[in-house]
Length: 153
Image 1 (cartoon, one colour):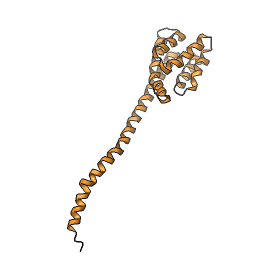
Image 2 (tube, one colour; image 1 turned 180 degrees about the horizontal axis):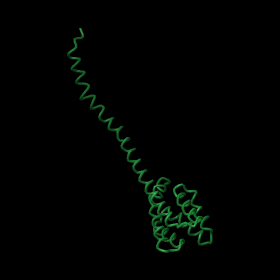
Image 3 (cartoon, helix red, strand yellow; image 1 turned 120 degrees about the vertical axis):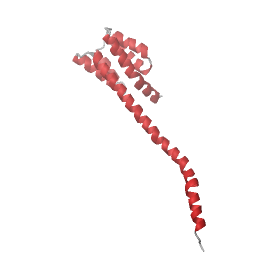
Image 4 (cartoon, one colour; image 1 turned 90 degrees about the vertical axis):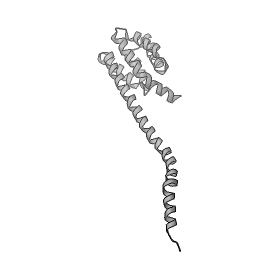
């Protein structure tokens, strides 16, 4: 369950961040944009964003609301980016676009690493299949030919 949640978070986070940046660029209020993305994405990212929406609607400080996501390692970059942008006054949409690009790059690198591991893991079974065939077809006939030609007495 935890692994599936982590995979879903990694897959949905760049999409959610891109959607949030697009909503903010279109002129939506931050809470309305966050709520729209929460409803569109769903899953663990939607649940986490729903908590931020609820805290902001109750009047919480936006920096504190975003900081509540910092406890989850997958959502911590989003929490830091949003908190930093809100504290500094920088446009949140620009920071979110950079974060989405970073998330996609990290996901691509992880996929490449997983593909390389598959190649290494596939070599062991192939070796176990080809080694007996090599011994039976290559080594045994040569050893038998040598044994016939050697006069032991």
